[in-house]
Image 1 (cartoon, helix red, strand yellow):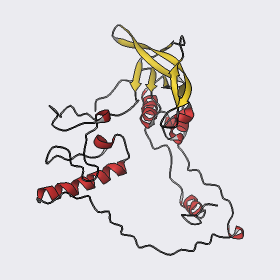
Image 2 (cartoon, helix red, strand yellow):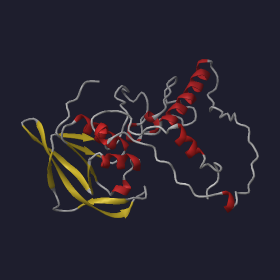
Image 3 (cartoon, helix red, strand yellow):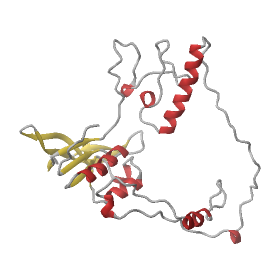
Image 4 (cartoon, helix red, strand yellow):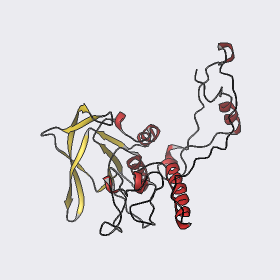
Length: 260
C-alpha cells in the first residue's frame, strides 16, 4: 500500500481489535498523541483485554462513554472532532447496556487525523443488478452447508458471508467451498462436507489428583521488549520463553480437562 502520513494528534473511533491495532500502529508512526474514543465502558470493549492493556502501557489515551458527532475541518483539513457524552441504560441483546447521548454534553477535541474503526463490511460493489443476493451488513447470502449462492456456479465463504470471524473459520469455509465446487464441476449433487476426525479416543482416569499431588503454581509471564523499542518500531512485543522457562511452564500442566 501507499505510505500514509500520520498526524501529530490522532483520534481513533471504536473499541474492537481493529481500533486498538489502528491506535498502536498510529502511535508508532506519529510523533504526537493517540486518543481512542469509545461509546461504552472499558469492560464492554470487544477488543482483547491484553491488547487494551498494552495500548495503555504505551501511552495511548482512552476516552470512554463518548461518541463522535461530526468531524470539523479547516481549509480542507481535519481540525477537530465534536463528540457527545453518553450514559448507559437498559441492556441490549449483546448483554451490554445501551448507550444514550446526554443532552447538552457536546465537546470538541483538537485532532488532525481521524481513523474510524467501528466495523467491517464486505465490498460487494462488483455485484450488479442483484445477480447475487446480499443480506444484513452487505454480506453475501449463501447456503451455510454448501456455500452455494443463489446463482448457479457461484460460491461464497468467509467474512463475505458471515461477517467478521476468525482466520480458522475462513479457512474452514474455503475447505467447504472447495468440496462443493469439485462436486459441481463433476456434475454431482452438492452435499455438505463430512467432517473427519483423525484422532483415536483414549481412556483416561476420571479420578483427579489428590491435594498432596497438586500445588498451585503461578503462570510464567513472557518477557517483553523495552518500552522505548515498542513505541518506535514494529518488532514483536511479546518475546518467547527461554528453554528453562518453557520447561517450567510446562511443568504446571496437570491434565487438559482438569481444573483445580
